[in-house]
Length: 544
Image (tube, rainbow, N blue to C red; front, side, top):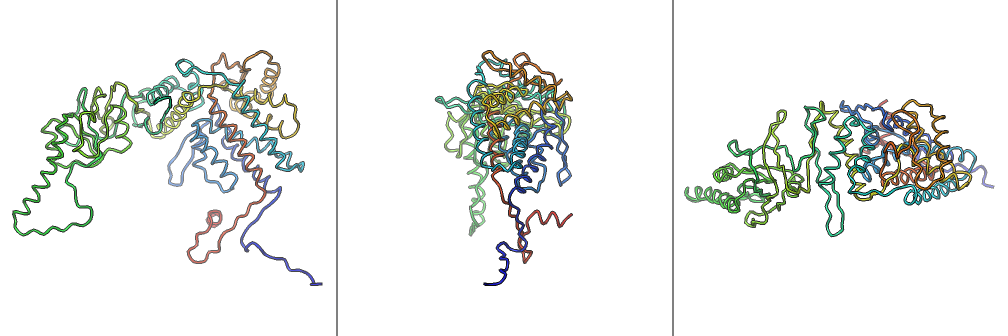
């Protein structure tokens, strides 16, 4: 009646829209591509990746999160994969590589079902169910309790974490550092347990020396020197005062005009300034400290008064350093010198000294009685080695922290994945549910692959071990990441914290679910009219 209808354009000309199966399969490809980048970084025989950033700096690492942070990707699904490595790093600190490998495999497991025209929501439902079963089993019969007081057992768990990293060679030292630091910063207030590594366990990297010289200080170290050359640089049992105010004359907040009539007024003005500084110093000297730390400046005059009283002053401290010193020696940070009292003075430190390491001066406040903050001193041959060591140590610290907060363990070396896979297989549900069980096997498979073992033979033998396991207790047979053989993890003593594993499975499965839910990608760039920024994808194509 109306003749041929014209096609209606809803989306603007340069908007690209992809929908349906194509998008889902593309997302799966993107996820697999990201997982392939990371796959060789799993296990004790992990390879390092070397990444160049646009500024020409290099990063050498095998930490999943650090690698993905440096890679620039274009595909939106790949971006969300990178995001999960960051979440994993922030939540539990370890397992960033496994979470990516697992998520990639979960997506790959869904591919055949999509090709058989099964609706994504059916797959998602099965994935959800499988995840719930895994979590329930992990919290009950697949994990064992750990006694936090048992130092040897704690050390074994942290050692298993460190073993896959660059500092595996110095694992005993790294384990000792991690456990000492976490024990120091653990705070138990009225039954509330707090382990704040980020704020109170500072890692100081000093190039030079060898990694063996790294240690945890019973106290705090800061990169500062004393303000006046004649001040004491070595004080035993110092009395410490921490300030948040400047020891110099206060200027007016905004522009201040002063009218002077006689010349004596000018002299009087200067005198008032000096008297102010003198009064501030007198307030400090009244509590008889040996050491004054302030976050702001110290004027020359104040230095003079403090020097005469035999007090060492250190200025322009970072707020975070000041908080750490307060926790280490028991002092209170005071905002106004008038309010200084005896109880604000910290007497917990046993030694204050200034040392020259390399070509910089460092201040040490050490031998504290019961420090609640500490500094980890890292030495190493070059900056790159130090950065990598720090990343590895952060993982070890997080593992130690997770153990203190949630003391449950699961067997490492792919054993727990195999056990979980068996649990799912025994339910004998067909379809996507069993696919999750097969996807879990990627961890032991990758471990075997990375050390050059025969993957098929190793996995078949491992599956048989788990299937024939009848007795009570956890079946702890897994792959030895060094040799690729099948070993009992109880004998090899490779354990991992439950918190890390739980987070890994939840994140991996949920990411797979999220990416399977997507059936439409609309990407549009605005026309370059005026000052509108173009989207990064279009810019990248323009530069090529």
